[in-house]
Length: 96
Length: 96
Image (cartoon, rainbow over all chains, first blue to last red; front, side, top):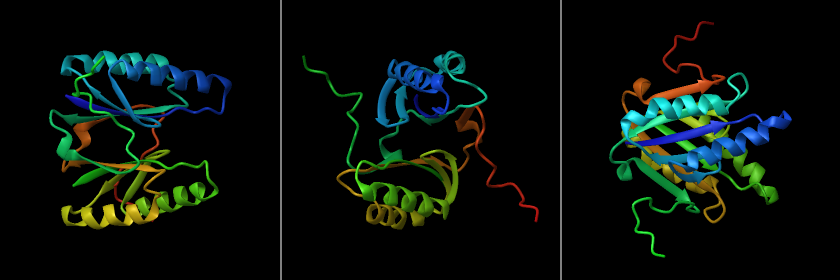
């Protein structure tokens, strides 16, 4: 299943920038950053509860907001991208 | 149908901030801001091409990136919100 993780991490307090980096770094384990605060991830359904839990431990539940959108299995027809594209295709074969 | 509009508008050049405000103001016509650069909108399918077109006219296609995610009709079960909630329910009855 594909999920979208979008996050608003408050950077007003000095720990905010640190939390922001940690959340972004964590999301990178599961997918790719497609916009500044938007990650597109491909996971197995059973992984969702632990991802939720991990994110709760990284964020400040009173100051930050993270949303997870379940997009289902096929997403190509569900996404329209306008302007400068900032993505690469997770499915592409990485040639070293 | 519900759609999600997420946008990265480059504010490095002086027109960027103006474009950012215009894109946000435009999205407000169709739904609610649920995070800093994320809008949740409820539209009719036929409206999507003109929304796409309008956004293209507001943004800088070389510098900015806007994504539209089609979430379908029922989204309550598709969204998980963690931390400080920044939403109100579009369906709620507004009492004046």
